[in-house]
Length: 469
Image (cartoon, rainbow, N blue to C red; front, side):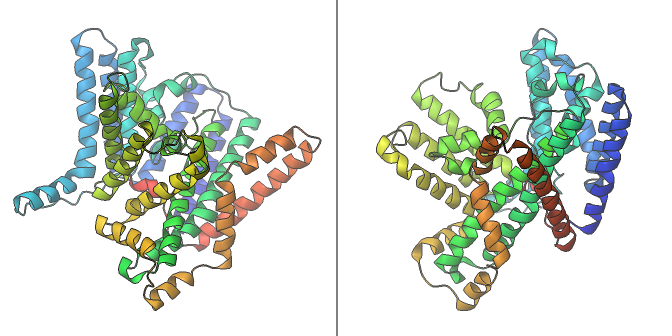
């Protein structure tokens, strides 16, 4: 974050909280959150905020139509799909398709350079899910435009998720608790997420960016593995950190969002990994793509094709690049192999190596996810396994980044990747050390907050990875 961004947040969050706390009327509180959310988004996207507002209004109208009986409701859902997916294609994939067209035909049509609005993948998915949910349950329709606007534009989860389904917070829009206890719990969760991003993800990201900044044929095996592992840690702590911040802020204002991550790096299979990784996205595709396509109800072959298509979409959702598509298909193919027990994840003898297998797939797939092109990605994977020495100067440059601060951050990253602290907290809260633990937790939160702020104001601009999706 830039210094101005930090200054904005330090003004924005306290002012929003104070106004919200002073006002007791829920309708006025909702209005405060809507205005704050639009200001928050407009600060980063002053033009695109109108695109989001128009999208919200149209989805609201489609929701009203979808709540009716007859063919009009189906037509409303069809138009909502066209609008939301069309909006994504227009802003996110037009240049990609134009480049493919040029490569296939040999023509040279202009490739449009369209700036991608921050968070478009998230607010379009939420708008679309609202219309579909109303079509499925007519009684769930929301006749108040501003309630739909608050649901979609609520600033904690607006620009990088998690994807919140309307049915999960429909009641909370009109009836929720605001208390000192919730504010305290939410603030602690927010600080945890901020520390994940600033103190761990940024450290991992510096190494990863350094490694991927060099040509793969100049990098030795050791530095290549360091870069791959660091990016895997970076994207987890970056995105789970943002999710923690969103959940924490939601808690402060009385909203309960579902968890988006559940320690995915302890998984023993790729199927388990996706039950723990980016849960809101995998749930969205399951509810709105996989099940409507037939799910697992139409035989093994159809089930396999459905899963592969979902993972193709999962990869493509992340960006207009073949690297994302291949990343998604790797996970889809591994799930298929596990389903048919070609990779015997259910066998007892396989369980001890299941974690190693899962992490190997995850790390290698994330190399492609991070790479600018498939050529760079596969070149990096090749460097990891050829065990050839790279350019001495390049390797020395990369290894010079492995400082004492990085090592400390990496150790915490490994520990926090497993549910170690929740287990310790559970034991402490059930023992005679409950009060000392609570006091210690408060002190640690204050220290983490201060360290995070010091790091923010002294570091270079380092946005959340999922801002660009």
